[in-house]
Length: 187
Image 1 (tube, rainbow, N blue to C red):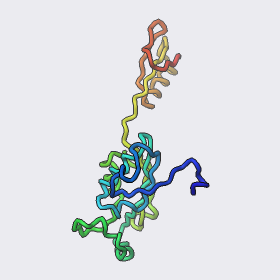
Image 2: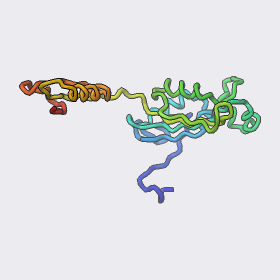
Image 3: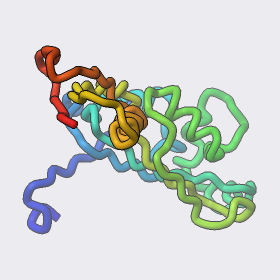
Image 4: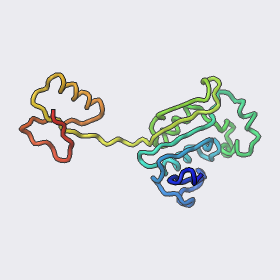
């Protein structure tokens, strides 16, 4: 695969173990793909916390986990030795999590609510849930100075749009000195 994608690094990560011992550094990856890893983890929450440490501030996690709506999966996959590895602490619950459980664990680990959630079938027949989430970083406030003389309808409309898009607007007249370090929009 390295020949197909020369600018990409591929590494396997044991989410149950420390990151540094495996040669990983914090905030190094833009995307982490985790497919059916949490149900095999000894502690799903701790494993998500480990994966979060690896993601850059604007990075994302692509998480796909078994999230069946019925327990028939236990009968099919329950014979595999790794299937019950997350229940070593004596729990008798199935190792997979519901969609709501996965979402709450993502939020608890410091990710925002999932940007996308896709079930492989209708909710009553699904087997897997796929989610994409970004780190829950507070976005920096975007600041802008707007220069205008009269607040007519077009100026009012533009100011409302800037506010809606998350800008902190400083209003200035042509005779005022705008604050340093801000973009200036002249109307």
